[in-house]
Image 1 (tube, helix red, strand yellow):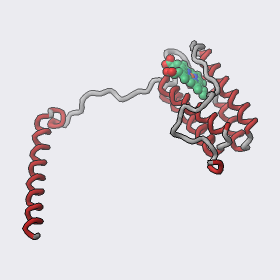
Image 2 (cartoon, helix red, strand yellow; image 1 turned 135 degrees about the vertical axis):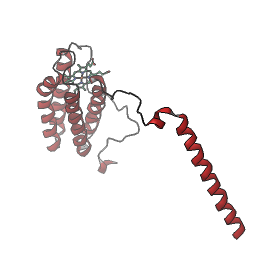
Image 3 (tube, helix red, strand yellow; image 1 turned 180 degrees about the vertical axis):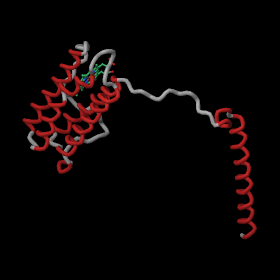
Image 4 (cartoon, helix red, strand yellow; image 1 turned 60 degrees about the horizontal axis):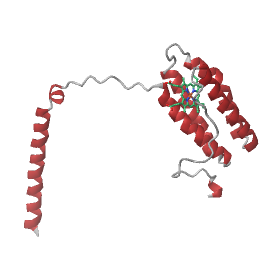
Length: 171
Ligand code: HEC
């Protein structure tokens, strides 16, 4: 028993030494790591379309939550949607002369405020009306931006089978 555990100990010390040797060998063979230099990778700069895809997902989930009367989730989604568009305005304020930040502020922010109020009031009718106005504002901006072919609408059904949109008390 004692012999066995000592044997196990010395074997693992040996494999630790081998592991250290292997690591040193890898470091020696890797010039960037050996000299401490970083490869010149430019920082990731998300394009406006990337922010928009996230906005599209949140816009869809916002409807699914609000339409089901799941106000906690709807509140979360409108917050994420707003923050995502604020990030879009911050990181892509101008797209080849298109004043994206100003357009986001003037076209969708007021509608986002109305959706927030409808969610606070837990009013489905008011939510649906505010949601449609927000959707129309998305399309107004796409039109002004020379992208009239990007048309946003209410989602007919969920494309997220792994997420429940039902209110907690209805599950
Ligand atoms: C600045 C005004 C503006 C607003 C407001 C705006 N968009 Fe966009 N959106 C754009 C522009 C510009 C593009 C095209 C980006 C490009 O060409 O790189 C775009 C592209 C998109 C795309 C296509 C992305 C792809 O690659 O398939 C979707 C989807 C989209 N927007 C959803 C929305 C939704 C949903 C809203 C509202 C909640 C919204 N947008 C609000 C300007 C806007």
